[in-house]
View (cartoon, rainbow, N blue to C red):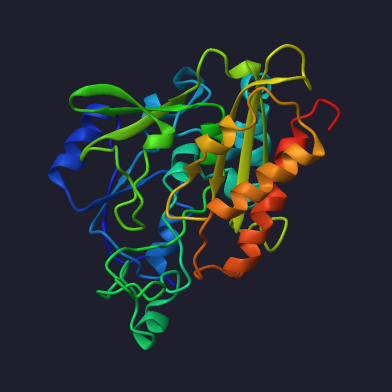
Length: 327
């Protein structure tokens, strides 16, 4: 399959990028292209203009910082700064897709990964034969036909829940300058609109971690069909900050999940229940059971909603127990 005809723009500076987005409102932004261009080959929501971010020095390279949006997953995997500051992010990056894809795919691209659904991620011929879906050419959601006016396609990025567990903020830049948004508030519960906090013309510049990020222990567990290449069918990140010594009382906690909804989610109520306690088998079991009750997977991926929901308990339990220093 070939990519359809389109106009490719290659701005060399942020100002040129802002000019391109303003001049061509009907555009897509291109990072590594490992997801977007595959969708284009399947004629999924093809835009007439694609604006490449590959040549913006503010988004990649050592000078842009370790969490610049244009850094490749391979760079995240092998970055010594991140290995010290947020090692679980490096480990999570190493689990995504394949080595070849990680050489091209970017941090920003993974955070902006398009939502997925088996009624959407199909060839144009398949969609025509099955009346397509709300996210593509139809006017009704096939997964949740009543009311049918909201897309429930699943967000399947790996890095968002890990960064949320570290308390990351997204730094956005636009013609009016920079601003910060907690990553946990960045996404919109809509498989089509996807982002609640990104204004037209804005780009994600980088991710910033809080000053105490190095004090947190974060672990990520995910479910997928194969141990390589596949998108997660469920993922849970748990972060804890110890009150005194590692393995002792928890002073603060965060819990985040992915691939259970149209957005990656934080679960503050579940995290709050961990504060003041020590990690033990019964505490981990309680967390897993509570998360299982909170997630609401839809029938739109390879695995059944019942199994994905059941595995949410297992993933949360494993992630919390893995935070122990002996794990």
